[in-house]
Length: 73
Image (cartoon, rainbow, N blue to C red; front, side, top):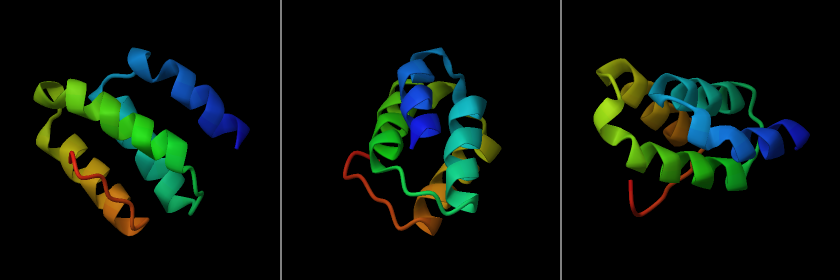
């Protein structure tokens, strides 16, 4: 997926809301992008203190909806 590939290259520029919105959009559209999901999880872990409760809820809900899991999260 070209959009997922480009998003992965820019994740270091994303704030917590952008990370949450990105994974939520892919999950809502049922687009499989495991490399992107792994990269978002890694980026989210480095910015975890900056997540608002709603952003954290949206991120975890999106991961749950697509059946994705990561032992670090």
